[in-house]
Image 1 (cartoon, helix red, strand yellow):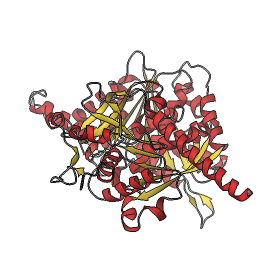
Image 2 (cartoon, protein in one colour):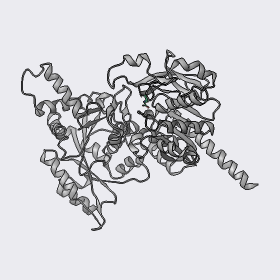
Image 3 (tube, helix red, strand yellow):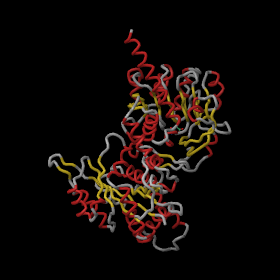
Image 4 (tube, protein in one colour):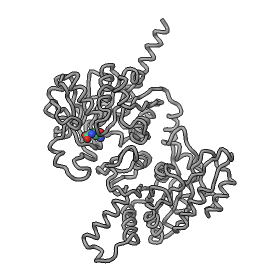
Length: 545
Ligand code: GLN
């Protein structure tokens, strides 16, 4: 029988429920259990793919092409839980499905209500993940307890334990225990209130995970336990980690969380094996190189907008024992000030994906700078399209070359909509989404990085390289290093004459893990390290003479 863990959050949003849920999943897997992860989001949007990165951070894309919440990125980085579209549901999707059933007459004219119709629908999406080979399903409820929007979800998970048996469910509530400077003490009242709200709707949390800036004394844990009706050993501290998010699971182990969960759910497990995880942290703490990478984008001030990119760069750093300083650069700043002052100190330049015209010329200038100064360059999706535009204009001499996304009347549409995409109408309009195969040129840098010629990576874009220009670009030195198996689509371009210039139409960042850096990210960071050591070597030589 599959066991269920529900993770809710209280007091404030942004407590890191996603990270905590992912950490729990990882710890259970490291005990030999098979885990499935899922997030239920209370917002009404049906399609997370259309939400602003300003409000919701990046759109995370799964193998099957589902566009989901960025917390699913944490799930994939921490666990091996296979994620499909069933791993993320919003209120909008739940209601849409119920309304569609009503329109088809499936409710036989009965009054359709939040309880039981909406709550049944929610329970059915949770049940979908349970299977014979699944030991634990971890369902994270987005939002904060007390929000109007999350009520049907909380009601559904309350009912869930009635349906499958109390002994098969575990409720974990994440709260905040703030430190008040003026009083010089930690405050437990917000936790008491949020657990109070949960109990009002009939959920008694089994475990409290308390986010805090400072350690919580035994006395305070006892107080929380008493007021919230939770035994002392189930009041778990989760102190802020300034060093790395990958410390979170280890600290939860130190506070006994994994032991508690397997005991409460009576899960027969192997002993916890955290060697790989400890190795990651060892690498992070003992770097052998220090480099800096500029990520030139449109949402530089917003950390979550390029979440998976930053994580993938860090993973490549762990792979090479390198500490990486990431410069988050606004491409519009480059338009205003030129690339020299802003970019010359960096060992590598990365342009991530994106939509819309703002800041495009700054990205193009950054790429020209990287190409001319022989700085390792990695372009991703829009980053590849900008690399093609730049090369088209500067080297192939196609005046005003552009993407038709930004200039419909460009004389040289080097990036455009291909007919195949125009035909696709499902999900996200004309978007090409999800995992697609790609064949690599055996002489390419990409083939060296991957160590093989057949790869597959995730996509999320509409526009493509315009094949009309392929020959001209090849004649001017660009290598089409990766193509779709039918050779119809350009997936990777490279400049063989450059120390490391690779740009890809897909999103490799979605497949990177701390325990297995994505090969192209590893190659890029490796090239940046090489450049840095040559530079320091040259500087030392000058000093010695
Ligand atoms: N806007 C571009 C396109 O639609 C690139 C998309 C992206 O970078 N994800 O093709």
